[in-house]
Image (tube, rainbow, N blue to C red; front, side, top):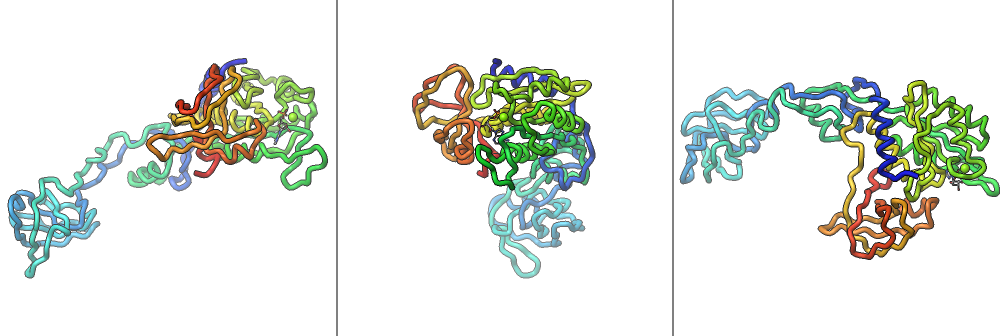
Length: 410
Ligand code: AMP
Ligand code: MG
């Protein structure tokens, strides 16, 4: 059995060795959640011209030094219109937020610090420094500089930035096609009434969401039975049209755990089949396809195990294939509110309630009956990470937690 770190390293090595998925140009609208595959430079200065940051008066700062002063108003410049006059000594132009700064002016006094007078004059009530309330051309970014690096995850801010830089289309990684096959004779579909000793299939649904949220394109296949020939046929079909295969169930030590044998019959090269993780120990990982280009995860059937193994191993692999700069998730250090006693040996990921909106983040364990307890997981907003060798943790110590963003709503 290998450690979590060793297993993750092997998964990432396999994903890196496979090489990136192809890139494709797409519309900026619809690019949220995708990974940028080109380096973007600014096509013009940001901001593109020197402009006012306030509604007020563009003037020469030197005119306002000392006491209040009265200036002649020579022009009104709304946002989007071109200034026509140069502001001379003793003069000002009325400007709106976002309007280009007229020539001659070097500062803006905000309207709240002024009083309009009769005869196109304004009283400036307090002095301004040169450059005040002015946003200089290129002060955010100079034309030609790096706007967004290759490998950036496109979120709302990045999409807005690309729009401001005039990029209606962007080159991003194509989505990995992820086949999902739930296996098990006891499983029935969600719309069916389970007979005695049978349960409803849920991992396929969970994985479909997790894959989509990780930027992949899930393809949920029907439930496969615990029958070797049928498994070989179903897995063989899925392997013909996916980049990553997620199987659930059938990978532990039971008499009907046939997934490993089916994969071997299909020529899949195993990389590991057990990891010192709790939950999620019976995890198969291997490479399939002529060049080993398909990553295969045989996830354990227990629902919490499936999710934990997906989050810890499969999601980083998907990000790696898409060329993301970040493969791993952020963790949050928090003060443990309950003591923990457990058998050491495996790294544990325990259902937890993380309170991180405070100076002193805290974490409380959510009682769970184990790796099948989806009730506990659905109440958790984080997993508390307990290091392999630790069996006893007193309340008050700091532990790392993995926030479950995207798994539960905030
Ligand atoms: P297995 O890994 O096949 O031994 O399954 C371990 C446990 O997970 C068993 O109790 C199964 O009934 C359950 N299980 C397996 N697959 C699923 C699934 N797709 N949805 C819900 N529970 C499952
Ligand atoms: Mg099974």
